[in-house]
Image (tube, rainbow, N blue to C red; front, side, top):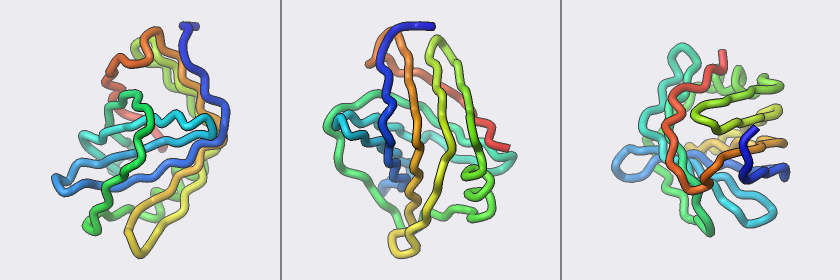
Length: 135
C-alpha cells in the first residue's frame, strides 16, 4: 500500500454543475480538508460515473446549475453500495455505504460517505480514474 493521506471522518459531498455544464463535486471533512472533483463526464447509463479528481484545500464554492438532473432510481442503486474498493494508478479508495439525498429546489444531490480513505504517493497529483462501476 502506498503512503499518503488517509481520511476516516464522515465526508459530505455536494454535486452540481457550473455555467459551462461541467460538474463539480466537493468533499468536506471535519479536518477542513476538501477534495475537489471536476466531472468531465457523468454517465448514469450502465451505472458508471466518469470523472477525474484532484486534491484541493479550503475549497468552499460549489456551482449549481438548475438544468442538472439525476435519476432517482439509479441514485438508490448507488446508495445500496456497502463497500467499493478502487485502486487505480497507485491510488486506493475504500468507500463505505453511500447515502444520497436530493435537493429538489436546487436540483443538487448530497452524498454522505461514512468512510473514505485515500492513499497516494503525491497528494497533489492529478489522476484520471475513469469509471466507478456501481451496478
